[in-house]
Image (tube, rainbow, N blue to C red; front, side):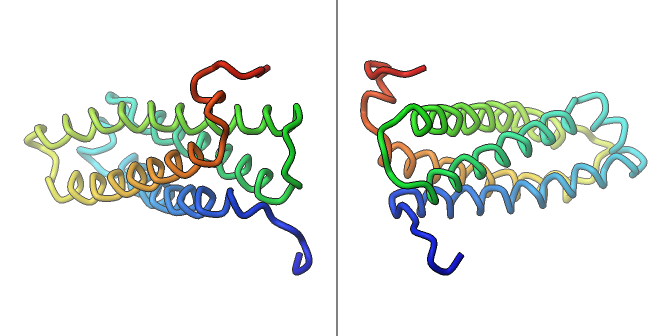
Length: 157
């Protein structure tokens, strides 16, 4: 796609989303590994952490896809753009919600005596990275969309 035209306003948001997704992938790898480790597998199952991490992965994947679409289609204020922007905002918000729930589980994990604290520390570090970059993406996206989208005063579907 060397000659493909891009819409530059979406580039920074897309880059931040990709960084958030990268950290998400590492965290998902760690949590999935825990499902086969004695002492951790029961905690993961009981806490619903795996479901939260998988949901957050799916929402980030959708957000990245939406942002890629916005980055590569010609800029316009039409129904397609509004729909994609709405999906991007929704996916990002859902990822943040899943992240906040995961954060509570990771905090609980640090209080469980039978779990090695180094597991919680490495997971928390990657969790913080995914949250940091998701927030950076949200700020970038907010700058790229009309104020009416954020206030709900525009014509949206």
